[in-house]
Length: 102
Image: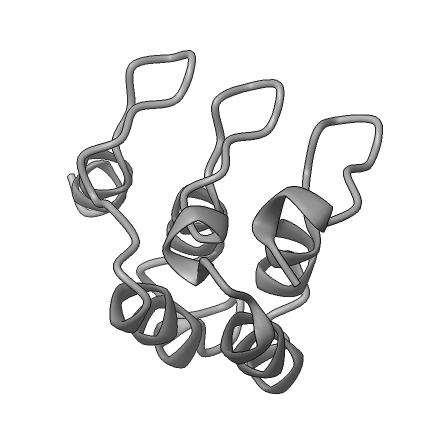
């Protein structure tokens, strides 16, 4: 399966986005391992320029209230997610994470 075959919802999100939103490490890992081009899938932007890594980083709070997203973030990194990609607001995942701890 190719990344271009992933179903998009009305916001332009793929299954990768959805599994990240759900903190579903198991299904995300299985999906990425089945794709011919997982490095493309981990960096596909939705209609707002949000990539899966943006969503995963936003889910983390300084208090850890959103659950443990670190395995999902590590998995995205393992599949070469780019940390310098910006969304429509000009934010990178690293900028979002740094802003949480001000």
